Structure formats: structure tokens, C-alpha cells
Image (tube, rainbow, N blue to C red; front, side, top):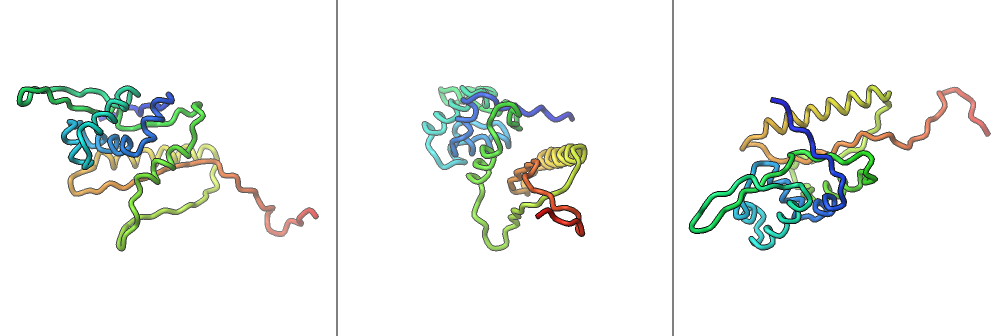
Length: 179
């Protein structure tokens, strides 16, 4: 099965919609499956009016759509889904990694005893081709794990950022330094 393409985020309305913590949580819920306002409200411990308002902002921004309706007890129940399970920043859009860093920080739970949280910063010396190949391998790993999600699994955030770092080079050992 071919993975659906990521939605490329371009518009200010999309960034504004995703910038609110509750809407970010709604997107994470809808990544699991389509859901009704009632299901979203219960999962978030919020009110139907509040959740409905935030779903409407996500819909207006083109991130969420109506997946279907059904008649229930004299009313119509609406089911919502994401336009795409994955979002990607427009490389020419002027919005950088800080947007994703803020989103990751907002959803990060405090580390408890025995937690498997693992946050490190490492640097690799790679050619452009090696960096591109590594990014592709990491994307494949993430896609494979998303498809393998089951009821016994827990959500872990993975913020991947392969970037050229501003790190100066030392001359090779034994090379006289300029004074």
C-alpha cells in the first residue's frame, strides 16, 4: 500500500490553526482515525462547543474535512478526518524549524521514573548525498512504524531535523595554526 503524500503547509491560516495547543491535540487525535465531536470532546475532557469551534478553525484552514454524517436521535452526527495524516513545511515558506520545535515542546510530557524519553543532540559529518539518504531512511522508518501502530502501543514523539550545522572546522592535527 502506497503512503498518502504529506500535506504541505503554506498558508498563514494553517500555521495559525496548528499553533494553538488544543488544535494541535485535535490533529494528533485525528491522526489515529476519523472521529465525531463527541468522541473528540470525551478524549480531550473539554466541552462540545470548544471542540466544535477549534474543529471549525482546522476545517477553514484546510487541515480537516467532513468524513461523513449519520442520523442519531433526531440529529445529525458529523465525523471528521484529517486531509492528510502527515504535514510537511513548505521549504520556501519562510517558516522554519522553530514552528515544529514549539509543537514538540507543547506535547512533550514530563519525564517520569522509568520513562523511555531520550532527547539528545548529535552531529554527523556527512556529504549531501549521505544526508539525503539518511533523511529518506528515517522517513521510511517513521512511515513503517505509523502503519504498525496497535492498541498495545503508546505514542512517542519523534522530531527529526537533519540540518546543516554552523560548526567551524579545526585544521588537521599537526597543522600549524595561524597567529
